[in-house]
Length: 597
Image (cartoon, rainbow, N blue to C red; front, top):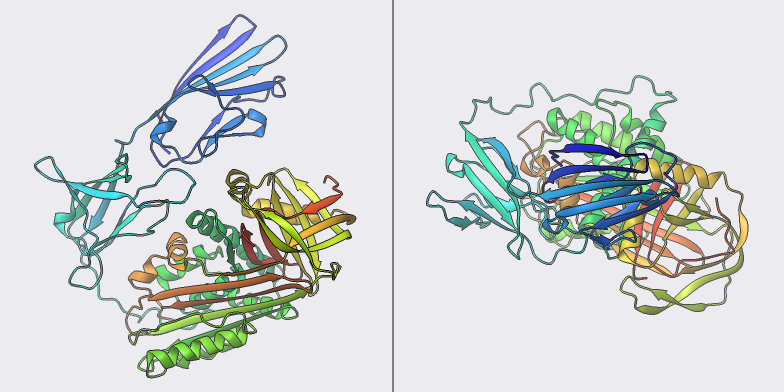
C-alpha cells in the first residue's frame, strides 16, 4: 500500500483531543487504521468507529473489521467503496479523543514494469472482497489514438498464450506476458467485469541483453552432504520450516477457495518440493528453498527429511517416487541420493500414456491404502519427468466415542442445516480452550501414534467468523496455540463431532505460482538431476483424504509434479478448521476446513 499522509493535530483545552489524517490508497491494497497511536489511560474506554457518519463498530461484513476492542479498524482489501471519512471516538468520563481519517482511493496510480525482449513480465491487479470470484477482470491496452483494445489471451504460434491470467477465478488477477517484443510497451488497464478500474500498468521494454547459452557445466554435481549429521539444531529448523510452509500454503489455498471444504497435507507437498530441491541448482534452488521456508543452502534438509519420515513411521507412511522419460540420462549421483534420502529409485516411463497413468495410479493407491486410487487421468507422451509423493495416516482415538450411532444437525455457512451422523461422548477427557489470538474455541483430541487432532471452532457459523479464524492462522499463532494447549490439564466435557469424509484436490498450479515458483513452468535449472537442457514443469497434482470415524482418524494424500477458559461442552456441528499434528515430529500432517460434512 502506498500512503501519502498529512497529519494535523490540535489540542482543544484539556477535554478533547482530535487529529486528522489524509490517506491516499490504491485498490486491492490493505489498510489498518489505529484509533490511538500511543497507550493511554483511556484505552479501556468505549470506542466507536464511524464511516461517513454511520456506525461500524459492530463491523460491516466484507467491508471493515474492528479489532482489539476498537483500537484498530482493519480493511483487508480496499475498493472504491472504501473512499470517505473514518472517525474513531474514544469517550471517557471527562475526556474524549477524536481521530479522523480522510481516505481517497486512487486507481490512477500507475505501476511501472520493466522487461526485456524475449523475457517474461507480470502485470499486477487485485479483485476486492473476500467472496468467491464471479467473473475475471478485463485487461486492455491504450492505443495511440486514445482508444483501448482488449488484451488477447489466445494461443500464439509457439503453442502458448502470449498473455495469460495467472490465477483465473482468483482474487489475484495478475497477467503474465511471455516472449516480450518491443510492441508490448505501453499502458495496460485492469477493470472489473462491472467496469471499475482496478489498476494501471505502464510497461517498458528494453533490448534483450546478450546472455550465454544455458549450460549445466558449473552445476552438474551432487547435493553437498550434511556436515553435522548429529546436529541438535537441524531437526528443529526443518520442523519450523514445514510448520511455516503449511500456514503459507493454507493462506494461498483458502484465498483460491474461500468457502468450500478444503484439505491438504503440508508434509506431503513439502517432501515433494524438497525431493525436487535435491536436483535443483542456481535460481531454481533458491526459489525452492524460499517456497518451502528452509534457509538457503541448508544442506541437511534431505537428511532431516529422511529422519522425519522415520520418526512418524508409526502412524504415517510417506513415500516418494520419480518417473522419467527413458531418453533422459538421470545423473547417477541424483539416483543414489534420491534412494538414500527419499527411498525412491528413479523409474523409466512406459511407452503409452495409458500404461503410465495406470502405473502411477497403482503406485499411489498402494501407498495410500487405496484411499486415493486415481491421481492422474491422462499423461502426455511428451512428459519428461514426474515426481510423486504419497502419505497415508491412520490413528485411533485414545478415548473412544459411544458406539451407538447418533444424528445431529450441522449448520452450514449459508445458515441452512443438514442432518449428519455424529460422534458423541457425554464425559470425554480432553482439552478445550478459547484462544483469543485466533478468535476460536479449540479442542485437542489425542490419537495413537503420538498425534493430535485440533479442531478450531469460530465464534459463529458464518463466512466472516470462519475467515477471521483463518486469517489469524499464521505460523507464530499456530505454534502459540500448540504450546498453550499442551499446558492445559484435560477435563471431562460433552463432545459432539460430525462423522466426515473429505476427499479434496486443491489447485496446485495456483499454489506453485503463489509460492514463487512460476519459473518451474517456464524452464527450471535441475542440473543436479539431469545435465541436459532446462526442464519445464508440465503438471502438478495433490489429492488428500481424511475421515473422522468411530475408530479414529484416517487420512491419505498424494502429490505429484510433472515436471484457558473451561467448557462443559464442545460441539463441532458448524464450519470449522482442523489441524492434524504429529506430536512426535512436531509438524502438521494435514490442514483443512470443513463447511459441509
